Length: 274
Image (cartoon, rainbow, N blue to C red; front, side, top):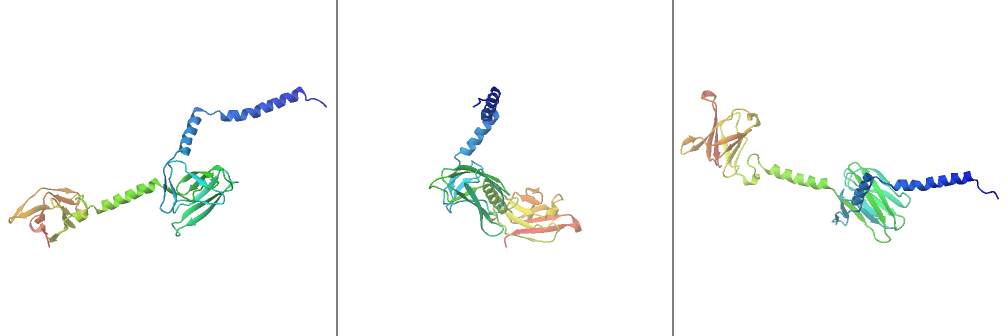
């Protein structure tokens, strides 16, 4: 039996050293790589907020941390996405021992996609990335012998902001221009008589001021002069124009709006009450 030559031994030694040195080099991380993995680890292992929805779902706040979904063999985990969201891709770290099947619920046009997740055995850990028409989900999957999350869903920060914006819009819509208070706190009991191209389209009072709203065409043009009728005399009171709105620092009962002179004069009479 012949012994290996020195050249063969040298080649084998070099190859062995090269092979053993590869993993060591791969483990040498730069300062930025260490920082990046630490930051990612904080997000992956963060506790976050987990709540229970009214229909039994485990609710994660989207984007706060990486959600960890626990599944069990012979059971299914139902991960429900936002209604109307269209799934582009589902990527699994372990495609052999984990299976994901799609399902839908809801009426056409507003259907929600469900990801039905099933592990083949307990003690598994992998990750899943789901890209949709609205966002990307990064989810950790774990399998347990008996414990599992039957239903999983998400709360979305933008939905909360949208609800606040909707409430604010409704409140602003109920605020009458100029007065800055809800319409149900104003007195609209005014009637007008006379003819003029600038005849007010709305008059109301908050108890201390009177607001006379003219057609938008009046904005930037000469406004009529207001006289308050008191004791049979026409008196000028303080008022100011804000665009097409005349704000009168007075709760008027009887007033006259006058524009022009002589035969070109136009006059509108305002009275409070029926």
